[in-house]
Image 1 (spheres, helix red, strand yellow):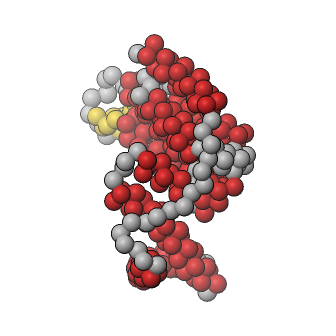
Image 2 (cartoon, helix red, strand yellow):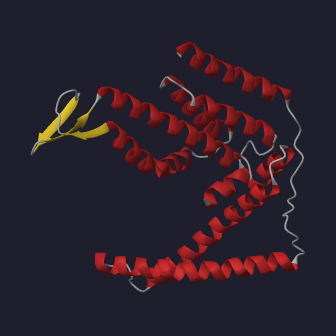
Image 3 (cartoon, one colour):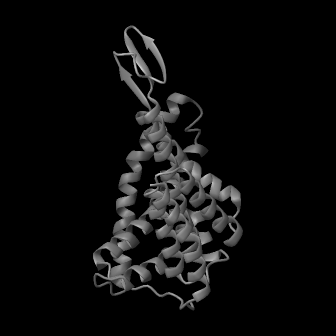
Length: 256
């Protein structure tokens, strides 16, 4: 997450208007989630990878490492869809029967799982494109212009801030445990991990109170004001967005 925040402020697309990047990511995500073919999610994934690595100048290893994070959750989700358990062995494409219970894959379920996996992966890449190229303050500005309720943007800012507080606190505690050989064995690792979680709750609560006190000392009145740079609107970028998104929309409509 710290890498995401640092790259958001230092990438090659930092001077592009945040509304343009948000529009590109949003339309691509909608096209990906509504796709009825695996081609659209693959194209979206390629577009986002190219935008992040080639246009924004972010190292490919960072993008790959970030994409690995949700991969385990996606795999668990699609495996539950692809595999079925039944006492009737008929109708399975691939199956294994043990003690009268058949565990296998129905071909339609496999296709559904593959589509769901690729759509989810494409949508996640859209979110990473927006997060890696656009700072949170600029996203808040775009949401305010769209008349999003203040309570929602306030919660976004506070949650985003507490992610870093949470990570910093957890890293500090774990570093202290490592210096005291807290993870030299499996049993000791589980014990140290339980201590980390129990200590983390109290420390994060204290940190949150200190953060609120610091905001109150700076005349916090229930609304967080953010300062952002003014970026020029580029008609050329909108033409590029239209040129990229219309084929995706047409592909979804024609395939349907």
